[in-house]
Length: 328
Ligand SMILES: Nc1ncnc2c1ncn2[C@@H]1O[C@H](COP(=O)(O)OP(=O)(O)OP(=O)(O)O)[C@@H](O)[C@H]1O
Image (cartoon, rainbow, N blue to C red):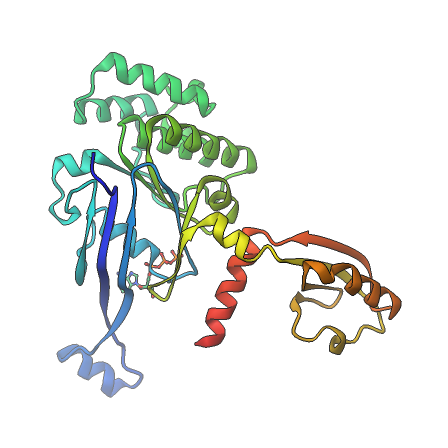
């Protein structure tokens, strides 16, 4: 077995984007001599991921997540640096490399709409050269866990979004990849479908030591599935470590949310405000000051309906991004 399921060394990607002139003269000039600007989508990333790790790759829109996944799966060449996945160079796209990974993208289906899932899975079985009995057994088992056993013979175009995504997952793992790349896999799914998929992933990771590399804007996905987080901002790594370490780092504070009264005055809680609208406000307070703060606010008739909450992963990540954006 390889030491690292994924190795990334100084990986960078630049896109050259044609600029469109503002004036007719500039547009005409561009036809003959196009001007290009460079987008530094991924800037010198470095990280290793061990077999069996479940890693959340997080970032705001445009942070470089999909670009990184495309380089790791061999659909995009790096501008500089290199990566290895299961010991393979993804740019070579060898059959052994392709058999060792699976990719599930929430916004792009890999199924054929006119085929039934069972027919599509048969195709995969022959392409991957897997014995029919063991493959059928795996498929039936996975379909049962995902609650889609009765959908295997329905034409794919007639499936709901949630059913289709479950089949994408099933197809993704039935070929027994070593690394599963997931790009926004639960986008648009209802809570029950999300729950089934998360449970399924955790079970499969445990039984098969599957490495999971997940990008998602849904922090519940990240919180339930991943042990480790790599957070990127503008193509650079902002945090790389265990999820629990990040939670611990912020565990010395709590959020107090309350309805603002008419006499509410912001100067009483300056520097503590996390967000507010016309009616409610959330402030962040060290654990040991929570009781005193509520007593102070109540005594000075600043609000009502006080609620105390632990910081969730989503809150922490929002705060990290807010801090980073302030620096820019
Ligand atoms: N084919 C392309 N040509 C030019 N620029 C691109 C191309 N693909 C992506 N970009 C740019 O590269 C940057 C990173 O894009 P990428 O899609 O990797 O981000 P992302 O983190 O996946 O974003 P999102 O969360 O919105 O999907 C963005 O500024 C984007 O506009």
